[in-house]
Length: 420
Image 1: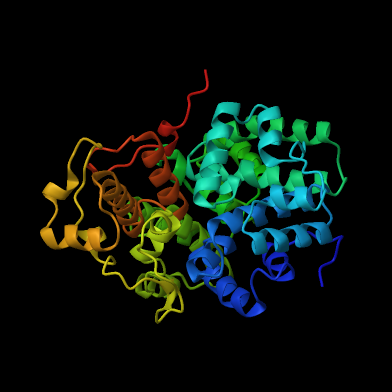
Image 2 (image 1 turned 90 degrees about the horizontal axis):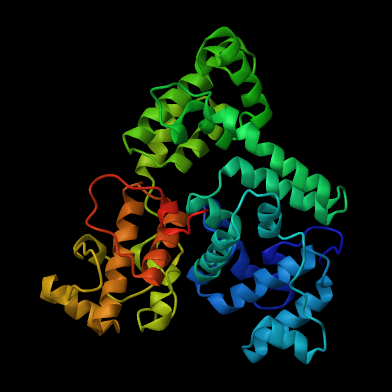
């Protein structure tokens, strides 16, 4: 039974509304802990939920957390929406419950009101959140318009606002202050390291140092003309073992052996088990959790076409397809725009495979090519899964198809509106 005073979890809400069973929930939670995908998307891959109902649940959860709906009303409305296959707002209208969407405690509202986020960027990222099924915060980070430490601070303040622990003016003031803090953090790293993959950033994202402590160490660096690593070694904040592990992981990230996010997660684990080589070996031998068929489901291509014909359990316990599409990502061509007839530069058997799965038009084939492109970057640790989904939808929405990959990848923020 849900507690009205505790923050409602998505899984609890779904089970209470009888949209999924506890038996559906448990394997999805286990997979989400391994893959890093949100629980909702794992349930979509599992075949227990569709994107429309996932959107309903996310909106209902937000309404409850903002105090605009009671948990009982949200559960009843979701159950009705699921039964009638309608949007949450329609279900609430049938129940004669007002649907409020103007809460000032929303994450986007906080970020725009304190000047950390442009409203035009927020609007597009909200659209991407709906398209991808990713929470807004993850879209903001994946698209390159927000740093993880800002999001962490904003989410913490949002929770305190919802619990009436602080007022909104105090929250806005705290968020405004973080901009100057980040300015000092960015100057702390060694001069020969990229700002996004320096040791301070990695330790921050591994939750081994707080922004305030990094700022203090930065002041020590400036005062004594030493680099960050030396200041850290002189302090009692981090063990020498973890510092050494951080340097090894930075090199692995630069050489594209692991993604930045994976590196931060590894460093967090090293702090506990003190065995970097063992962990790296486990990661390198770990099978890929997300198949290309899964990725096509997450891009919604298989919803619009006939690719997905119901979940089939594979050896990892994940829902997948039996369509012959799995290996196509390795042979699909790289194209620059929608003017290409991609079918003319594809092997005949690949064209046949696409058409068997319902991708009959040139545009639909190009969508699969775009998805394969992002999946390839994900498999090569150039993008994490959030970035792969965001860039796919940006490319599809704007028909801004990227030129053949040159070996480097620009900031994802290039697709978003510029702040004047």
